[in-house]
Amino acid sequence: MPFAIALSGLLGVLALFQLALIFGAPLGAFAWGGQHRVLPTRLRIGSAVSIVIYALIVVVAWDRVGAVDIFDESVAEVAMWVIFAYFMLGIVMNAVSRSKPERYTMVPMCVVLAALSYFIATG
Image (cartoon, rainbow, N blue to C red; front, side):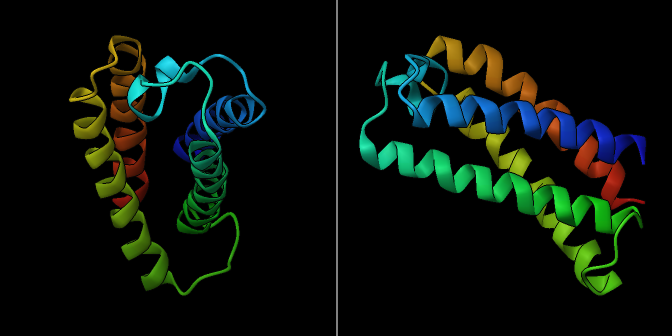
């Protein structure tokens, strides 16, 4: 359960970051390739979708560790491995970003999220 708590906390921080981007915070160098200081509408929508994805990830993680019972056990197990793969892809995608701020903050964040997801997936 400590891994699910840590994962939830980090995703909560990322959700607040995405929310700030949605409301026009000039933090665009840290997200979406870093091309926009303030995100245009289409990327703000992407940030909103990210928040929904983070919430779903948290629900799956809590289900996988047995804190809630929403999904069939096999569904939660497979979903957690998909989430692990999602964060592994995030490492690669952020590592190739042209934005140094994004690379230097989001790659380590994705490494930690991938590790936590791995530990939750292996149960």
